[in-house]
Image (cartoon, rainbow, N blue to C red; front, top):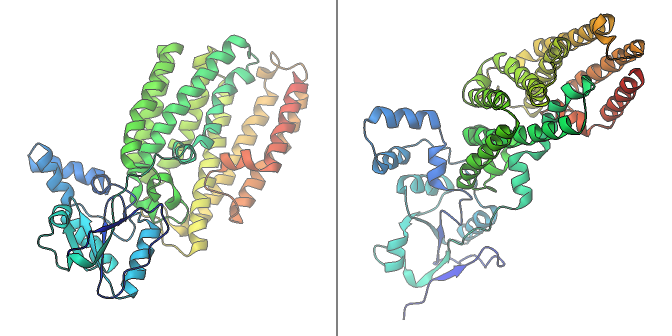
Length: 440
């Protein structure tokens, strides 16, 4: 009598691997692969997929499916379930045969099976019917597709990069430096902060979708929610329009001018994700501009006059920080013995010139600040402007320390986030705030 196929839920304890003469069949999607094969094919090279679809002159899902079936996937970098893969390898060591169950994209499934050293691919229909099976159906065990639970709040927090919202506090800078912080401007600026945060989270998800292949080859970015398979690609695609619609609604509550600034931010961010970040130094200037745009948006939202001194100072500060960011990324690759980045137009040999430019931009920022303190622009805002001179050595200390920490390869990818987490940086900022308050 034929024995029923045994099915195992990954939430249970891992079963004993099939012994020699038995067969282990594994559902590719939902069991072995922590992602969706259709989405993996679609985002393997989005630009190339669109070009092929346009050049084919065909419309409809059939044409798109055919194009995706021929997509170039890096099978070694796909997010496999470690428990399932280890169980399969243990079964292989015991002499069992291993087959993948594929519902679509049989060619990709066959390549995955070949890459992992499995024995072949069967379809779910053949397995259910018992037809055309290259093994004895009476002696198989199956790791079947089980619906994955929803992504956790922690996973979503990482994918949306809530910690990056610290950057959006820059929208509060204009009202603070103009000494016009009151209940009305605080409420409007807070709404601007939320709009920028939602808009940025959608852009981060889009950026991670476009960078899936590169992130999976990166020593730290491979742990991102989308790259690791913790967050389904389809969920990210659904979240992006929701976040942007919220940003649109919040912007309309402020003003059409603010909406225009936010739209410019989003357009620049998308251009950065698609093209600009792969251009040498163009990416640095773009990043500095995006930071400065947050300050401009804060001024528009609160209805305060934007200081030219503040914008010039900010531009040099953020250029320095963007260069430190690139320096940290390249020095990390150098320390890990990795090759030049494939998705950036930089080489590890550029480290010295990047460091020099970062230091020069930082010193220019301090010079601009000194010129501001010497100008007549401080008189209407501060009763004791001479106290502001105490900020110059603190700025020199912080920039110098940031450069030294980056040179020692102790700084993470983003120096702004580092400043919020670093104790010495927080102390420096607190001292600067106290000096500014004393100078008023």
